[in-house]
Image (tube, rainbow, N blue to C red; front, side, top):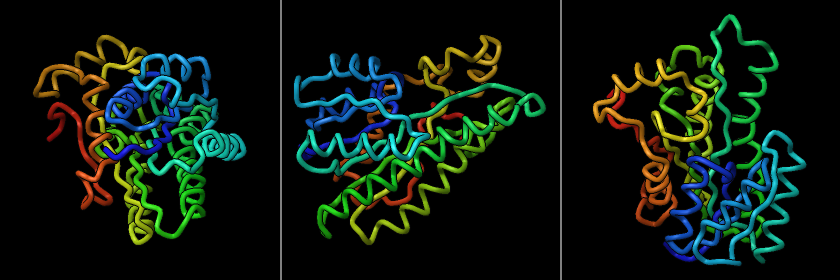
Length: 247
């Protein structure tokens, strides 16, 4: 990977933290953002490259927070980031009939609207830097967005929206030399997954040919590939990282 600056949301834990580690290993300068600044700062301690990386607080639900954090990243790095990973997300398990309005809106705001706001601000910043600025974006969706899953109506709907948003952005931005793709993880062993009951985990594992949950770094390796020139002819792709779940 060419040395460049990668902007990553939700970098304080799970798949986001693993992406930061893999990208830093590949030589990227990483701007780690998270609503929890201390978690983002802890991620920095795990990255090779020392002081070149940056940690920032950002709430993806709030346009001003998004724009302020991106401006701070550009000021500290000297140029706008050219790579973006939209990883911030929430998982709230609730039956359809027990999902209240606040829960629904929180899930949609973080998982879908957040990607819209960050992608819009990132793209504007990159294009303002010059007509020929190349970039790449990877959105973290989910297999639930493709197949749905019991008790995950809000989460599945938000991730289905991420898939559609990815394809629309990919079609619009390809001519501007910005490639947009997404990754559809299956069941991954992250702090977010800790909220899933043991019974639900076991029933999920029975649907996975590999018979186990994935590791965050297994998703991160695919993200790094999609950001690199090795995937230069991939646009609007949705890559499944699932252990074979629902092939």
